Length: 211
Image 1 (cartoon, one colour):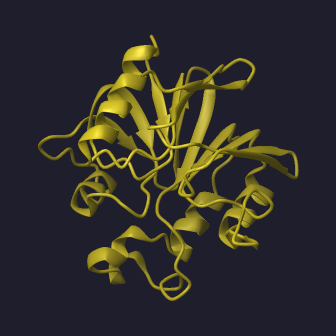
Image 2 (cartoon, one colour):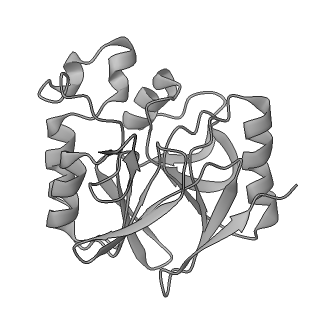
């Protein structure tokens, strides 16, 4: 299975890197951790929305619609999918403390990029999750400018769901840690690396982006 970090593929060079990663593998499915910004892909790809997306596309996907120019992309928004024997779940959006206690229907304009408490509560009802995707990181994974960039709602989800593997994006650098019994990996962006995941072992291998 192909695994991809942030893409920001509205930019031509990044889109070229994104599509090159698909070309380099014979995968029949992919996972991606947000800031995709290009929604017509060669193989079925399950992703969580990040903070930089076409929010009209994201809202359409949340509603179960498939707008024009979208193909082979499936949004994970507090729900799960069965892939190659794995139960994969995801929380879409990023965290904003000023928006967190609003209902999703209250979010307007660019604020639609956030997740809210009701999204997290729906996620906490999921069971038997093997792999969890999020744009935000839990605590203990990354420090930037001497500050832990972890997000409390992600901590709560990992404590409750105890997935074997959690994959996150947002910070554009590779990092690995554990959170309780969960292995957590922050993914490098697609213009640097792509990854492959063995569904039987959950072994995640990093590959340099082809020149």
